[in-house]
Length: 422
Image 1 (cartoon, rainbow, N blue to C red):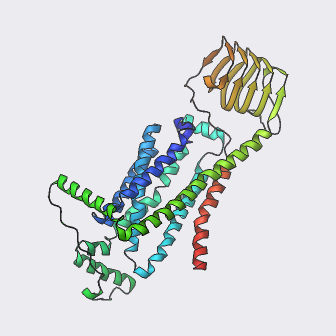
Image 2: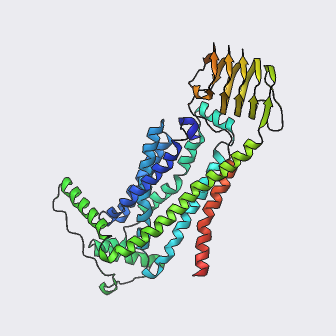
């Protein structure tokens, strides 16, 4: 749907995923800002950034703007991923933090949420895709906006929450931390309960950061940037180096294998499906056709011509009208006084053919569709210039939904397996 609206080529499509991953990477690098600004403000900033730029993405008119807004939305999401885990962990006792692994299940649940909406709203046929593009009613805008509902709920919920207690202790806000501890005790006990928290029961304090050397905006920016670099540098100190390297290797391997398989498996299934589809092609050789083309078989209906190979076929005064031509190859064919009108094509090519006195009215044939062809006195007219991409109209939506559901089930299997075994 996005590819049809913005004329995205097959070479440009992978960059949509690359930009999303790049945004997550940049957002993760900004995570140490939570040590200096606060967990809650950084989380709110990431959610606001994600919400605003996702809304802009849903209304973007061009591919370049789409890529930029997607990058910014991914940066906001990349900020939220690590900071949310830290924020949640600091409200739990140390012996209960291993249970935070179940947060990964919410990532899979979010995937199910998007897949279900996509399956219900996105077009299921090529005709629906073309109709949506012409009427400017593409469903991907609605899917993108509906995917924001969990983020919007998280933003509203976070506005009602306090800063992390441990971060308040880290910054010397002991009174606020004690008040929050008492409030948490009331939430978990009864409203009338009173818990007198003593200083001995507080977690060990961490020396608070030094105040900025200057009250000017530039001075604060330089100070925070210096602290940010110092926090990154601490990862490579001798006492943290081994743990940091092990975690980098483990998480890098998991991410590489998971996202690599997520890209590799659908591509291989698509290739297998294409091989099976091509093997069923109907071959027509050394024939002549006159008048309106009307080929009927088990694979085609009246307004569709798909999966054909024409070799040494002559078309004289023929008409290809109001057709969707998909996966059709004309080899060494002759076209004389043939009319192509209101044709929507996909993977349709003319090779080594002779084309004379033909009219192409409101078709999407571009010059690259004619390979080593002799063109004589032909007319090409269209109300709108054709999109210069070879859009695939053989959709596999049901298969793609099944593949994504199976992929999203893997975290549940891993979580429950680890729970049973360990």
